[in-house]
Image 1 (cartoon, rainbow, N blue to C red):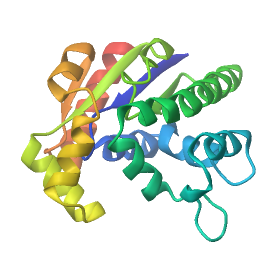
Image 2: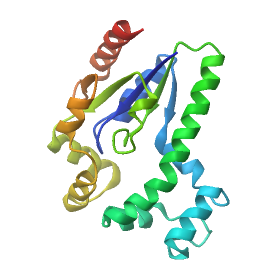
Image 3: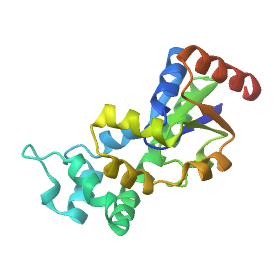
Image 4: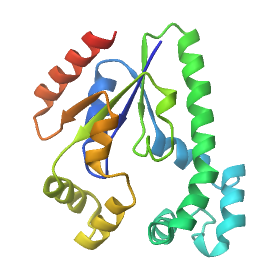
Length: 196
């Protein structure tokens, strides 16, 4: 079974590509969704995060305040690494198990949507990497519209990821997500023809 990862930086259009793959009938596993599930109240990952970061990161209902935690780790490399060391191995394990299950079911391909693919060292999980690409101005406009964050917050988040140019070199395919959906779908179909 073929394993393909979609990656990129904040606002680069990964979700759009993932949605096109879903609409084509492929199983898409989303790393952000998986990590949200893994950090729900009561899980072992949740308990470990509380042990490391303290109860100050909890909301009134006892769930982790993801925004607050993001603020803490985006401004401190060491804390960011601590969080990643808790979450990434668990995400990796989940993906491996899920891929094995899909392979047993006879699926021809699975798509992993992993924003921090290279940062987490997960590229060895997959056969091919597709990078969602857009220029910095487009990235900022998208993120501002979606998350309502300032330019400074955007640049700070961007700084915490491997630069896009470096990701381009490490990827097998680069898709410019400034195109319309129809063109993107046609680009993805071309890629699938090459790799399947």
